[in-house]
Structure formats: structure tokens, C-alpha cells
Length: 101
Image 1 (cartoon, helix red, strand yellow):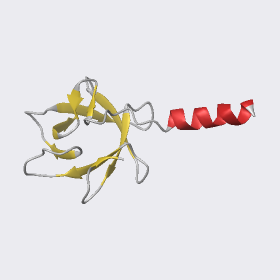
Image 2 (spheres, one colour):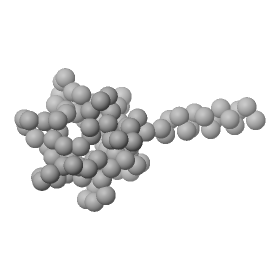
Image 3 (cartoon, helix red, strand yellow):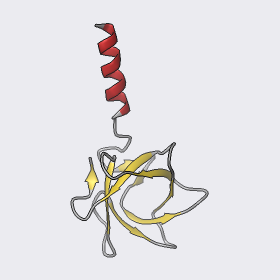
Image 4 (tube, helix red, strand yellow):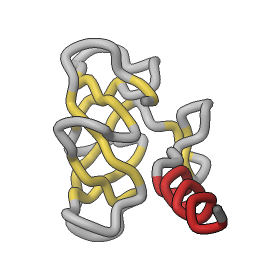
């Protein structure tokens, strides 16, 4: 019985979303203008095809909702580095319905 409880605790702990319900992480909102960098990033992000923490919709107009991103070269709200492991959170690109998952 203790073994089953331990396994369940590990599984639920690993699936916890690090992003707050108000769509912030480390005090930064996760919508708006985003710059991809190699060094000095605010967040390390891993891209998944399913099961990600955040669904991201690329937009060229106003980004006011959680997960609405516009990639820019300057004037960013936050920066990311795309990684294969050691991510702060994971994303999945979507064409509609961005936000926390």
C-alpha cells in the first residue's frame, strides 16, 4: 500500500504545472512579445507536440491572453531559450485555444 501511495505521489508531483493560474512564472507574464536567445534567457522552454504546460498561439496582433506570443527581435516582454532538457516549462504550438493546460 505504501508503495502505491509513493508511486501516485511521484506521478502527480511530476505532472504539476510550474506556471501559476494567473499565467506567470517567476513574476513574469507568459504572454506578449518573446525573443528567442542563446544566453541570458528568462526561461528555458522545451517544445512538445502534446502534453505541454502551456499552449502557445503565435500572433502578430495584440497579445493579451495567456499563451498568446509574438516573436520579436527587440522590445520583448521576456526571453526564452529552446532546450531539449532542463526546462522551466514546456510549450505546444496551437492554432487556437492558447493557455494553460
